[in-house]
Length: 334
Ligand code: OGA
Ligand code: NI
Image 1: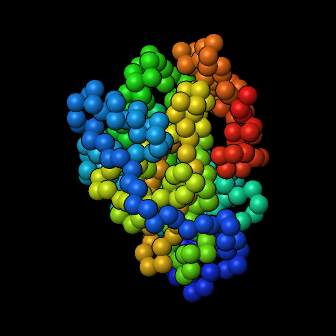
Image 2: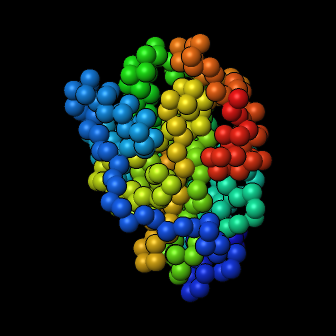
């Protein structure tokens, strides 16, 4: 449990185990590139085009007026920040290094294949959909309103993800319900990432470069910047936009669309002065779901570029090759 960054009240120096060699932490570009911000309340044809264009061009965009009540977002952020401020003994019950546990508090252990540490603690929450009492009872009971707040946040957030998938299907010529069913029917996972103030942020990373493993991700990044996205060989900062979700595609969507939509690498940097808490909601396939390129998106001139694999098999391999885009591609590309 001492491995939790939030175990200490504050940090005076950056321990060596968190230092990334300079070639593994190139600084972000100074170019002012910003992600498109798409207003989902606009005309549906316009939104469909904007989502598909941004999805193909950058693989990352932000959405506003998405229908998740502002209060549900504020409550979620507040309850999650409050969780990380709880006294250590309250958090201790939730700490686990067992990656097989659906709900747990841990530090740094998702993407490391080389034993490196990065400046993040994470509260992972899982639930089926719709959320039932069993799932809810697996979540922390402190702060006392956390369970209720998470439940009220997950349903509309998942609905935004499903609506975006529907719009993308329409734009790509797939049946609008192509991503309904098992491919989006696994547990909804919520990762609450917590990056405490860091004494030497330039020499470490909050999250190393990775692509998400799931279908689609909706990130509430709060108002402290830290997310950086790969763009033409550079890293660009994603500016916080009030009430927006940052949306990106996971490997499963890339495979299912035969590479038309790509899973783009991203990373997070910690901040010297301010703690940062972000909430990532991942829509996942069921473990048995066989994910392969949609038949509508392959043809004589466009052969399948990825092997169809069950999500379970994907995860098994993903855990061994690490999260860098290149190594995952190598494992699954034909
Ligand atoms: C993630 C992620 C980015 C952030 O949780 O997969 O990329 O800004 N988070 O916390
Ligand atoms: Ni991510």
